[in-house]
Structure formats: structure tokens, C-alpha cells
Image (cartoon, rainbow, N blue to C red; front, side, top):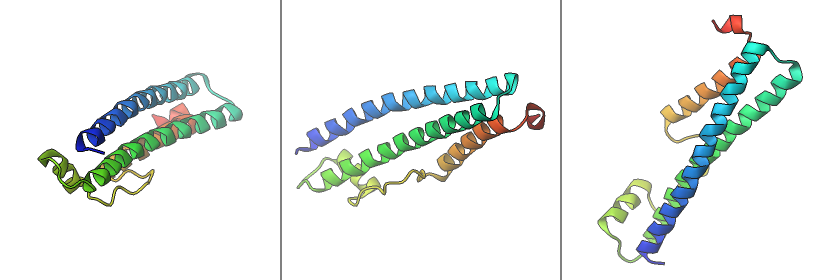
Length: 136
């Protein structure tokens, strides 16, 4: 495979991943709308459990999509490493990622991003399980 083919495939994968990230953002908005509805109108135990499962599924889905971005970078850098010569731009990707690839993990490698997802999860769970008066 040539350098151009590797970079073209990487960009095509980023386009697909961008669509999934957009869907994930929309689903996250839906989850927060559900939290607002629970806070305004109340919910029984079964509704809270289902909302919790739905919200945790959305967080999982989004973390999985972020993981796929890292895998895309890692696989592309690994494929570029196997070529005899690469452009300076591709060499920059290899220098950034390395030839070993990226580890497969749902925990984001960036600690700020990991804290951000933790905060979103806490906001969702607190909104579902705590009373409105406790959140004020």
C-alpha cells in the first residue's frame, strides 16, 4: 500500500468517525433532556434504572468512538512505518504516534478529557438519582 492510500483510508475513517461522534453528541443531548424531564416531572424506580442504563450506554458509545480515533491514528502510523520512505508530514505522524500503535482502552489518554467524561457521567447520574432540591 502506498503512502497516499494509507492517508486516504485514514481520512475516510475520520469522516465515518465524525458521523458517529455527531450521533453520540445528539444522544448525549437526549440523555440530558431525559434528566431534565425526570427532574421536572419525577420518575419511578424502573424509569430511573432505564434512564441510567441509557445514559451509561451513551457514555460508553462516546468513549468507544474516541478510542476508535486513537486506533485510527495508531493503525495509520503503523502502516506508514512499514514503507521505505515517507513524506515529512507522514514522518510527523509517525514521530507523534510511534510505530507500536495505540493501546486499546476506553479510558482517554488525555487526563483532562478523562475528567470531562467523568464529570458528564456524574452530572447524568446525579440528575437521575438526586432530588431537585438536593441539586440546588
